[in-house]
Amino acid sequence: MEKKGQFWNEKIEMLPPKEMKTLQWKRLKRQLRYNYENSVYYREEKFHRVGLTPDKIRTLEDFQKIPLMTKDEHRWVQEESLRRFGHPYGLITCAPREKIIRINSTSGTTGMPTLYTLTRHDIEVLNEMHARKYWRAGLRPGNIVLQALSLSMFTGGLPLSDGLQAMGLCVVPVGIEGGARRVLDFALLTKPDVLITTPSFGEYLIEKSPEIAGRQADELGIRWFFCAGEPGAGIPSLRKRLAEGFNARVFDHTGGGHAFHGISCDSIPYPGMHFLSPDHCFLELVTPEAKLPIEMSDGAVGEMVFTFIDWEGGPLMRYALGDLVQVFMEPCTCGWPEMRFKILGRTDDMLIVKGVNVYPAAVKDIVGEFIPKTTGAMRILLEKAGPLVNPPLRMQVEYGFTEMRDQDKEQLKKELAGQIGERLRVRPSIELVPPYSLPRGSGKMPMIEIEKDG
Image 1 (cartoon, rainbow, N blue to C red):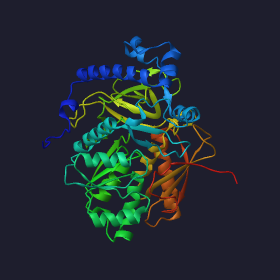
Image 2 (tube, helix red, strand yellow):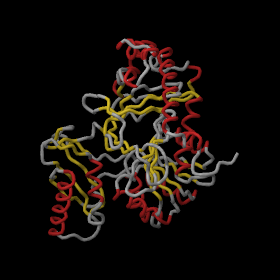
Image 3 (cartoon, rainbow, N blue to C red):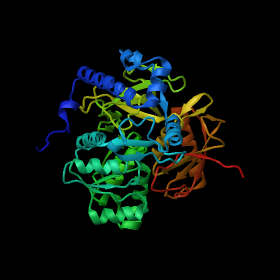
């Protein structure tokens, strides 16, 4: 049957909040029983260690007695399973191995990759979540999507391609391994109108398109740009750069091979991302330091904790991923009904300068506002890993392509430092560097660099 309207699954997406809470609690209790019965690790370490069984969990407060799980613990559990069983699926994977049909992973750039084990049911859930996001943004069968992300085991690779195809879209999974030239060559050849990539790579494509493709990026025919892996639409200067550079609508969105999914709308000012998977993901907030529960009220800020519900393979439970978010419960001006959230940064990226919390994305936003005096590219330089930073906060910022005299550069440094000091309450030390002197590439672009001795 042909789908019409702005919602992929209107029955669920328009469910009143009270009814959604009822559905969530019903599925959560069923999921807890499933986890308890099918995971020896959950049973012994998350329930019995604190004197709980699923029957004893009758309220949210009871549920929040279950200890949190972190990515480091997730890796340890995989390693322990390898030692005990010779494979990584023996402790938190709940479905029998014959039902597991796909394994995705994180990048593993900071250690052992964390694995996501999925059954056919879980993949169907993921496809539904992807469809909700892209349908909301206006994509329909006939759109051609250039997917310029890592296509390996990454959760934004194969799971994303599957979801796009399942809703009837045409996917060009070009990946990023061939760099800007390959992506632009396929943009010219396949004529996509949708691009999914990191915002930093999007900026790079805008810069390189005249040289490689022989035309400006806004002539490529891209009309939807979906930011992945990094903040984009939530940084006004970056959103403007991408929107004008491609002549496209720009969206933030999240959710690859797991149950937490959201997408932004077109409202200005940026209202955050709409949380589109409450029927499959139960969200909580906790304090970043003590991990104490925070009420999910309008404007509340805390570290995000999620629990997969209605999930078979590896259902993560009270999982603290390290993202600091702000939630909004009031209706959005766009008319979409659900709770929204802004990802403020990573708890492990947050810097503390003289007692003031500083997030690199907020610094990048201010630098981007000075385009074309800057290119928008910047790095924060640290002597050692944060969060504590010996003042001043040291930065490198690329000045723009226009001819700049020494006095112009000094004035730019003064204006940048003034804006950062006024808005973020931290006065930086800024070194201006030439355009293209900071690293570019096809993956996520780090905004922090730890300087090595010697």
